[in-house]
Image (cartoon, rainbow, N blue to C red):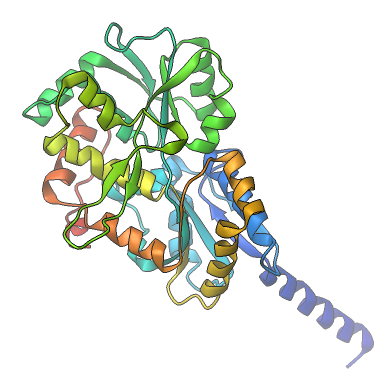
Length: 357
């Protein structure tokens, strides 16, 4: 074999090895989105404990479904690819036809996060109509605002009617347009994940926390159910607490159960890392993420951008996902789909197969 041919083959081997030595995080959003910001922080920290470079590959699409579908369908045989899913993917899993199935994957880890809803300081929701921007994954906000404004009602249709009286649901805005409209006062409410809230809202002197959805806590003992507790990063604004303060009783009924279902799937898996089952690199990736979750410098780097939130790594992440699946029942899922169709005008799909997951 000639020397030039040997050199060419050697270069090909080096380049191929280098390409597959990198770890790719598939992000179903465009660069600069909340999930992209979070993934870039985590990638930078994981690199410290892996011998590979961790790179981000963005696949933006309508409602961020396309990137997750691509991971599900096209990367089954790629051991060097990790999926970064976010809350909107959880909402779509419940209400739309998607290819991805959470049970098909194994967790590298997930961060049990929250969504913070802000309002203009001069806005009183009991005196004026709420103007809020619709967007991917924002169904929990519609449920929450309806509960706060309407209290307990006996039927979903009454909640739909009350929502339409209380809320102007503005569609068609990008995240940047929504934030600008909020700063200008054209919208009197907005929502963000913790990283985006720190970046876009916390410095706005005319904005304040309105409510948040809380942190889901798995049951500690058999027979207990998952519950939501206050967020220590934004203490005192849990939706359930504000509801009780206003109405004098705790939220209840099918509508509230549907709200708990959709917020649990969105926020309980708001930022998660997955690989296909059987990935031989899983243990190594989990070990690196465990170091991110326990090293003080890495904890501080993540907290600076996001806040202090718990990690569920490896098998803990699988168990957390499995607990969320137990929250799906016929009544909650049916109410969720009905409200999405009638109040929000969404083409929601009732998926019976979710009841037997």
